[in-house]
Length: 118
Image 1 (cartoon, rainbow, N blue to C red):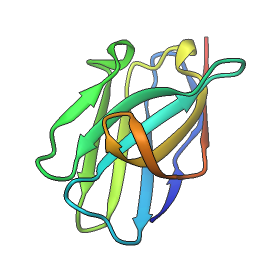
Image 2: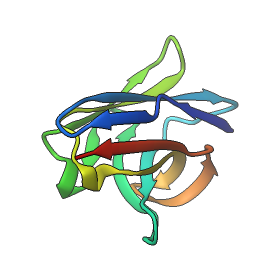
Image 3: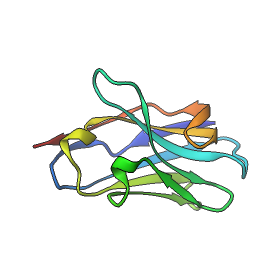
Image 4: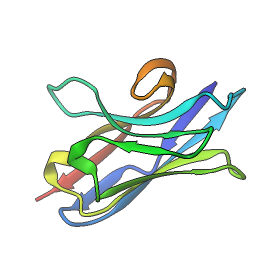
């Protein structure tokens, strides 16, 4: 499975960005699509996930109500709509395929930088 993330950039606090992860290769219904992020000097952390089996979604508390993860089966992409962005959302964002929510990673995409200015 190969993943290609795009859509990062520079935005002012309160603004929005939409990240997209293009997926190629064989996926199974049991696989879970995730977004992670890593801020400078911090460990990579889980942000959001969506199950391929039933589209159930999961979010870390700090992004609930602001971020939305979704799948586009026709385009074979997983998107992360980020609204009401805060400076603390600044990080490199990664998409990943996992066997469990936020863990047991099968494949990582390359990161895309998101910078939120105050």
